Length: 365
Image 1 (cartoon, rainbow, N blue to C red):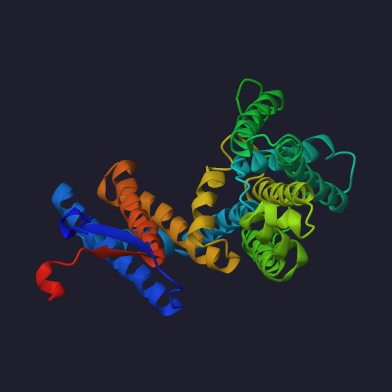
Image 2: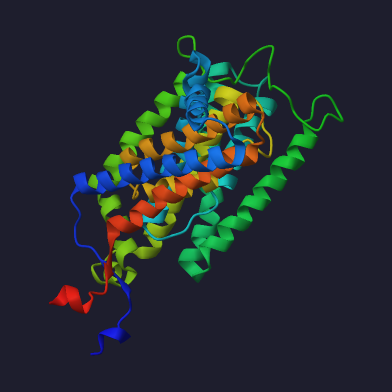
């Protein structure tokens, strides 16, 4: 074959890559990303890039309160990421986590408002937990049922469920608004604090962090060592193979989506009952979509998701500090975040694939 007709570059899939080498590629990508960010910062603003990087860490670790906020935001993002992971591993694209969190939060707020005079505090909290889990599970179970029975497109279905959830929350916010005409509910049960999840120690965030830590460990065991986790992996690899060996694919789809929705419901419970004590249409904060990135970057490994969620929240918290310290608008910090994420995602390509260049006649001799 004429060498001149061969492509200059061709890409081949790598075999198994040693964990040490894979992490070396990832670390190298982060270093390269920081260098590019430094160049972009200097050329566009004239600000010392090291001062910008320092502001990122200042925004995340500058005070005890900032550290607790970092851990809280990381915990909620991790919780939502854990929720979508079983479905993604099964190749069922649950993009409705945002709506499932909202519905879980709405169920929590409903219990706090409607049952505050009917139940003692401990029983109200128990009802809130059950309601949030069931609400999230039902919201994910609806598209799962249609997927299993009629093979509908779960991506579009779950996305549409997000909009329905948002409008439901908007309706009840107006219905329960305090005072009338305010357009918001405000802090629910501010005087009595009935229905507020108990505070551990001096931080109102510690309970959320501990709950998500337990969920992380359980999800790791569930996916790695349980029969259900094995069935999820097989269905994700090939539905035909799963059916051949006797796995009921429809049952696995519905069960897994119910689990995803239930954990999203827990995230809504922690936000409304644990920290915010109110419900708004934006309480999920886009975490349902950010969780997709966390799950994929971690290769569906719950323990790795701790690192990826930490990185994304670190960048988010630092972005606000950059805007405040240097008078730059939020767009600039988003540019830096985008550059870093581009390199991190790109590093996964070089871990899985190898770039080969066509040899010249001199090299062949």
